[in-house]
Length: 357
Length: 214
Image (cartoon, rainbow over all chains, first blue to last red):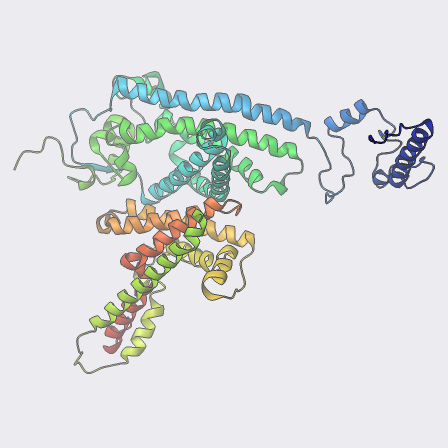
């Protein structure tokens, strides 16, 4: 005997199956709406503010338009704070941060670095004409040096961690991969956030300590008109030339902008709206790249760029020759006022013309 | 075995053993030095002098208060900050409970932890600046001082990097630096954290016996 023939579904079978399917759909829908006539709103939506049928009383496009424009909603699971589903200005902030800010900021730092390298290759180290005298003139007091190095230490730590946060995704992530970058970025951000408030305190003290000699003085323009850093000779200046004063006032304004915006980013609950944080972030990043770019020039001139400059900040004294060459008016004033010139001070080394014993 | 498991397991046991045994070895060595018999007639109690010496040196001598103000303030900021972080930071208490003592105690709130870390960092940086900028400190500082300063700074910095407590690698890095610090401790000037009591006691007893306030 062969296999029994498979029974073909009859119209009756098909009708029963269709009825069962319809019944199950109706049971499911009734369960969802909580009503047998299926006229009530979906149960999950009755507690919210979405009225009407599945799309509410509005069209899809209206609904999404409201979302995009930051329409507040009564969101479940939020403590009643910001009730905005899509922060559209956040997209503009993200575009600015990852676009022009990163691009031009990075370029500015690279240009500054290139400028320093080219300047060094062209001019070399600016040396004291005729060598040292061996007599030292006091330039920076101990408190001035302490606060300078304190803020310099913090600045370097904050600049490095800040640069990682800003450019790491372009430079470091492709090398170390996403997982390692995640830890790296977290570490940078934590260090940046922790050390930031110390920088603010130090900056305010430093601005106060250095204010007196950084106010505009008659003759400051002379230094610029005679060529400044690019002049063949050494234009006279007071304790700080106009370039140094520019650095001070840049630190004043950009530093305070960084500090204010940084505080807001460190303590975000101080902000009333997310847009304030986004603006603070742009100000913070923008001011920081400017400061970092200019600081490269400052560090270069203060260390390898100009012979005898660093010892003023490490030991407090500069050679008399250096003082007269780079800050002639200040040197005359300092020596006339009786600030001790230390004969043969060890701080600045021996005079170059010292006879052999 | 992951890197974290190594640093929290065998390496931790090794480092803490070197720390404890090394410190004991140094202390026993100091005690075994003994002191020369003092045959002078005592004018006052040497013991009281030793006790007074412990506490009087917590504040500078009157004649030097201005000159020592900087490192007095920086020193207290760093040492109290570090002590607070070591003993009362929640992650440290949890680690000590699970790996050393078996019980816990009250911890600082998060904001207290951050504030204490800020104070400790500021103090350490200020002390390091003094070491590299003060003419006398430059002369008397050697490699050991700089290594100790930098190791302490790195231990604190890696701890700060791991503040988010969400990456094992950062926690392991902090553990590794702390373990290097622990192993370096007994054989360096970091031992001053223990030996200061001996030196103060010795000086206090010496002068106390002669009736002089140490």
